[in-house]
Length: 120
Image 1: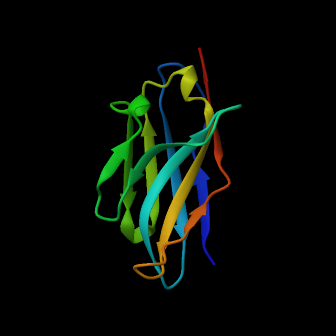
Image 2: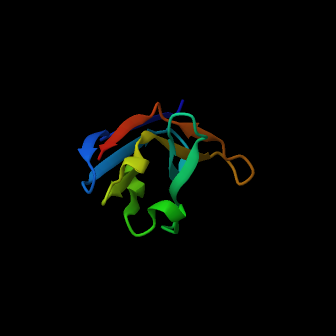
């Protein structure tokens, strides 16, 4: 059984900052990559940032230079530091954890999402 839980969402004014946290609880297996996605009303879910177990990161162009993803492998926890927020960042943010069962079997598990609202 794998559980993924996000926290840290909320409301902030434009220019402000928020830090999201996500913890994945898993027994027996390791976590491969972890990532943050977001979905705004009427839009498709999109990748915001991703980090591998080795610490390699990639970001959506729209958040480069403003958001930072990090993780603590020993705690199966990933963070998303969001700075210089704009109303366009308003969305439900989802955490994804890829659980490595074997080299060919790495299913993903998702959290319930946390709302981020940025007002002008």
